[in-house]
Image (cartoon, rainbow, N blue to C red):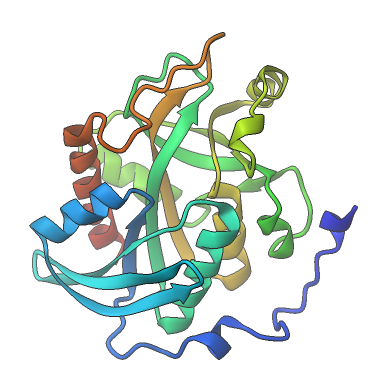
Length: 254
């Protein structure tokens, strides 16, 4: 299988450092999500400035510096999909970032998990392609291996109810069939996303710290699909509070 051709050489023909240069006064910690509406809200409530950008054929994505209670933290909107966001994080690390806090939606496979619940992944099934270029082939990968206990402590101190469990990361959201969902549930998955396992592989390969958590959206745990709050504008007041939680977590991990 081609996905078993992992190369342990950490130097490629061209590398992130060949594409971007170190950023002067680069924030060591960056908080990021996939929802444009939440990024726009963050820019409206925090003092901010554009300090750089990540460029691709899709255009330029700004990197912001925000001030949180006197502490400077980076802010960035991640692209959806494992390969896209991992490439962006590669460039953030090359600029000088050391820690990334990333949060986004997931679908739930456990129908008892309510809408906009916080989920802290501790393992992921690698049903995507990107991670196999960063970590030797296996069905699963540990997630948040160096941040899990600290994240739990932070959420506990916030008196926040949250779920801990395994996520199914897939490249193909429109191929989440009933048979595959049933199998992933048997394997212990409580939710599904599109980036987590690849991000965890990147963190392991580059020896960087990436803290990941989800807020639950659509429900795939019943016979019929429920979109719930998958759309950005749904339950937006709750999501704004989750943004604040992520920013405080980033501050805590800085």
